[in-house]
Image 1 (tube, rainbow, N blue to C red):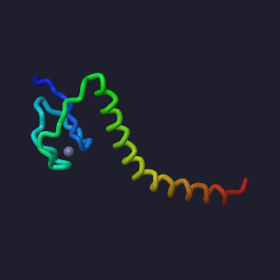
Image 2: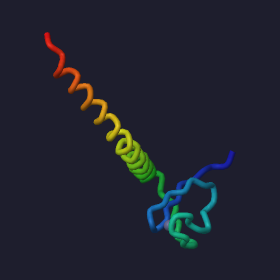
Image 3: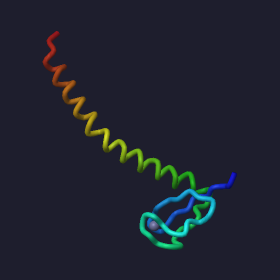
Image 4: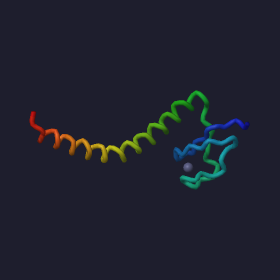
Length: 80
Ligand SMILES: [Zn+2]
């Protein structure tokens, strides 16, 4: 199995490859990728995961807020 490295373009795009990516699919620069040192790797990938999670949450938040609203309306109508 080939060892995979993490490369980051000057635009911030991250690629996981065993060799340096030639061009960046995000900004179309050539030769802008630099290998991320292993001690920075955890941090960088955490950031990436967090960013993706936030994007996902932003999408589901609107939906769950709607549900909460309708639930509280029902609760208010209920008489004990
Ligand atoms: Zn780029």
